[in-house]
Length: 71
Image (cartoon, rainbow, N blue to C red; front, side, top):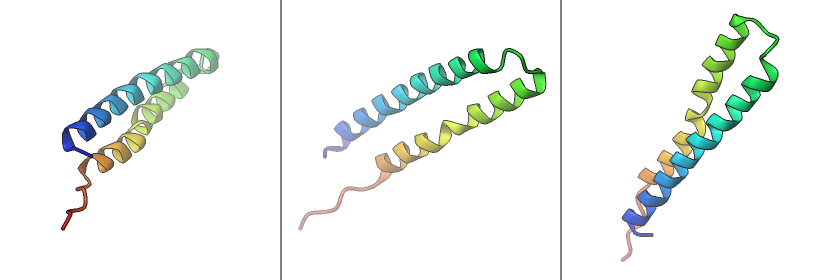
């Protein structure tokens, strides 16, 4: 796969991940956290704010893997 195409796909995947993850995290926060206190809000947003990094690291790792050399 050409490197430019790989970077384009990776960029689109990262942007889609962030948008979808933010929508899901916001929906969970609105529906589940309304009756809990500020500590629960803090912990939820702390963990959900860091959790998206794991799949993003997988995408970035895929981006930096060098293609095998032919010949």
